[in-house]
Image (cartoon, rainbow, N blue to C red; front, side, top):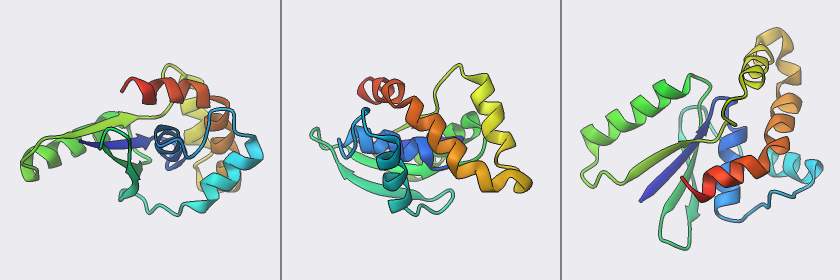
Length: 140
C-alpha cells in the first residue's frame, strides 16, 4: 500500500507524519532538532516525495499541499481511480484536527507580507502537536 501524508501548512505536517511513521524522528524531538529535520527536505509543492518503506511493506510519501484538505483528498482519489489498477493508496491529513485557530493563523502567515514568519510559525505549530500527529500515524 502507498500512504501519502499531506498537510495544509505545506510540507511541515506531512514531513513530521512521514518521519514519525518511519521512526526517523520521535515525538519528543527538540524544537531545534525538528527545525533541522524540516530544513533537510526540499519538497516541491504538489509533488509527492518518497520517504521509504515501513516494516509492513507500505511505501511512505509526503505531499506539500497548501490547499483545502478535501480538495487534496479528492484529487488523490480521483487520480487513483483513473490511473492505478491496484487501488492501494491511502491519503492522510497530518494537520492537527479541530484546531480552527491554528488553521486560520497558518493561512494568515502564508500571506506574502508575513511569509518571513511562515517557517517559524508552522514548524512551531507542528512541533507542539507531534504527539497528536503520532497518534494519527499509528492508526491511519
